[in-house]
Length: 302
Image (tube, rainbow, N blue to C red; front, side, top):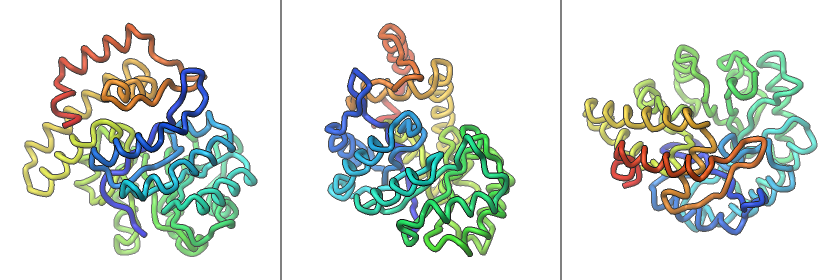
């Protein structure tokens, strides 16, 4: 199973006391379906995975199980962990919850030394469900693990029965192009840098996973439609809007700002969990005004 289209990197909804608000998941799924995304990537970086307990992540998978099907969304469960038993438990729960695919970033404390060591790790991680479609989540900025992803592709095809491709949140364009060409272009590469979505399309990515798709998927659908129609001026103009929006989030602390926007568009997912710090109310008010001034509520959410 190869994924394509826009896959939203879903926020984990929280209550004000930082407990997980599982009851919000059905509404969240409905919201994303209305925006036109093809699927959800649950419990990844945007989902604050390493700030959750394994039990919370398992319950989150259970909450998405079935709800995704009701909304015609593909469900990718992120099972990456720093210890093997918990990672395997997450794989087992993902299968039982009905996830369409699993994905994992590299462990980030004791780090694999090279592509072979990382592949060996994933062989162990996926043993509870080796047949499930598997995507390597390549995000060196967060994990500190920089391996030869191209070498990993060759090893994974031989050693991981369910291997499908890579969620590529890696800024190395030369590496991305090599991965896209590898093995006749048969590997599924999901592009993971929202502010460069158009670049991913130009290089040949058929799918993408992004945090800003949680509220601005219509903008990226416009970029993709313009690209497919050969209207590069429109595609570039809308991509510039995406980049400006994302710069605004980084100026305020990206993930807290992006999660605050969910409430601004009518799908409150609560605060980020410590050690991240939620935005103060006055900063959220200023963010709303700044977004309104740039036209966000006209071109991003409609």
